[in-house]
Length: 196
Image (cartoon, rainbow, N blue to C red; front, side, top):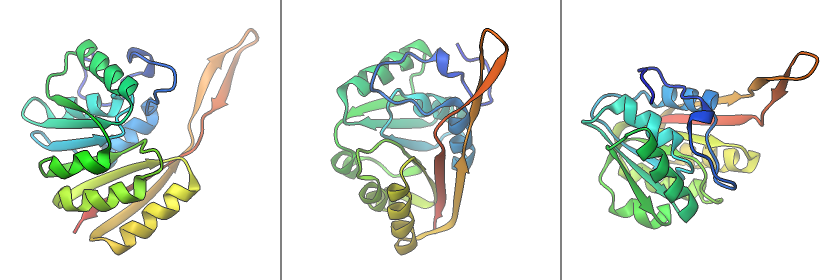
């Protein structure tokens, strides 16, 4: 299905469902690059949505690594499973439930991605610090300014360094009857950091 080592699977390759978010292709590639993934790592994808980050990470860490994908929305869990099957991915475990509870039982991670969390992002970042190995990376995608602010406050208090904030605004082309126009997508702010 995806025969390349580089990330950036086109969004249209993924099965989609109404009200289940997907991390868009270009934002996803930046998040993956900020994670600094290696073969054999253990990765969490908290708020996995359609599973696009999980699938791309699974390719990067190869079969010796594993992804633990968590979502509290049954539709997201089912959609992630459908996409895993479509891409023939076997190193991802999908967990249904509240990340604030489920994360406590998981093994330590090398990398943690945090996406849609229903407003609990700062609290999940706090819990993630205890589950992340020293030198591990955390990558958080935010849309709301309030979420960005709360995450930065928490990261400042916790044991993280090399905090990087990157805001991405993507425009994609669309053919019209008279030519091609560029349509802007919502800006996304990506926060990444290393556990000291």
